[in-house]
Amino acid sequence: MSRKIKIFDTTLRDGEQCPGASMTATEKLEVAHQLARLKVDIIEAGFPISSPGDFESVRQIAREVKGPVICGLARAVPKDIDRAGEAIRPAERGRIHTFIATSDIHLEHKLRKSRDEVLEMAVAAVTQARQWTDDVEFSPEDAARSDIEYLCRVVEAVIKAGATTINIPDTVGYAVPEQFAAIFTALLNKVPGAEKAVFSCHCHNDLGLAVANSLAAIQAGAGQVECTINGIGERAGNTSLEEVVMALRTRRDFFGLETGIVTQEIVKASRLVGKATGFQVQPNKAVVGANAFAHAAGIHQDGMLKEQTTYEIMRPEDVGLDSTRLVLSNRSGRHAFKVRMSALGYELDGEDLDRAYQRFLEVADKKKVVFDEDLVALMAESEGLHDTEFTLEYMTVMSSLEGVPTATVRLRRGEEFLTEVGTGVGSVDAVYRTIDKIIPVEHELIDYIVSAVTGGTDALAEVTVRLGRGEQIFTGRTACLDVIEASAKAYLQALNKLLYYGDRRSHTERLAAQEV
Ligand code: KIV
Ligand code: ZN
Image 1: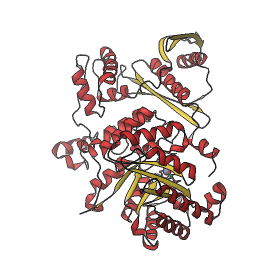
Image 2 (image 1 turned 60 degrees about the horizontal axis):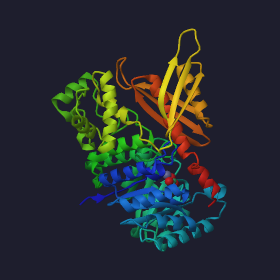
Image 3 (image 1 turned 90 degrees about the horizontal axis):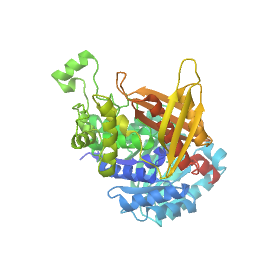
Image 4 (image 1 turned 45 degrees about the horizontal axis):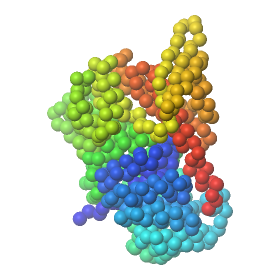
């Protein structure tokens, strides 16, 4: 029997923490259900003390999502642990994950505490967490830069206090594989009682080494890997779930290890997270990128036609991709549309199906054929956040070589209609300035990106807009046949998110306000 590696998914906690990736409670629940279908072992559902919204969302997931252990994060302070304990209480199986930094840099500059004080806090936190659940994880934050002798002392003490999982984070993505593996080897060999706990790795991707470091840790004895769908997370992100899982599966001959992941659910999970966060993956992303299984070179295509394994190390169907490429048109019925969407990773029913089918027909009426890429782009538009959001009701734009570009925009919010006229240096600028007159909310435009989804002048234009306010970033993404319409809708989507989440302070701001 090969050793089984537990998959701890932190998309809803570390993943959601990255600027611009905020999800609504409904989206988080939907992602959690998909993680359960994927059969991850543990879902880190959020950081309950960080906001009432996060607390509610963890509690709702604990109540409704069956199968995986539901985990809540807590700093090593009493109020955090009680809040996390309360949030995970309704779960079939609940875990508290508590953490405190152990590197000298963090002790001196962030915590301003001595090594003994931090050790005492870690033990107290684990002891308190054990009063809520017998499944307690402890993380020495910035472990990869911590003194190994001190790290061993802390780990020994928290295992004695009842921690059942010891997670070793490379918080700042500084580690390299051999060095990271050596930390695990040292802990597993030196710490008395190490055999009583599962050791876990948690890597960040600042040097592009998160997956490599995680695999090295697993080879050195880690029994759990922490990761996120599409590798989203703070800064350059976390270990990507799909990459680490498919590496273990594809190279089983080398690793000799297993996970319990239903890999056929990977693409659905990736698409769902892309849609909920507004962060679509780049085309060349390993495992889930649009080109991950596309073979362009003639020599490769020839080899593939003769024998798939000549150039393909994984089969598209193993990650849930349908390898047949179909084209839909305005004569395609709802059923054909639903089946195709399901093959692309979107399970649509009821109102969601009606809305998506309607959007598909609008495009199919103008564009003769609708490709898979078009369907995926159409799905990027997220559903309404709340009933007070602004929607685009009407828009005209006048632009000529000599004149000043002028836009008239009418927005709707509930029963209210708001109209303004404005000018700008170009058509998009005129539209954005006019929308700003209607919604005068402070922000800066960080990114405005346009891309054509397929080839041809009738291709869908996909526009991504990122708006910033303080440390927070809000993303809007829309695909339409008309580039100005897509620009206006993407801008509105980002503004709606800014209005919705505006009062939620960013993770870092929230933590800074509550000194550990
Ligand atoms: O990166 C990190 O150190 C974390 C901890 C809370 C585990 O996310
Ligand atoms: Zn992290």
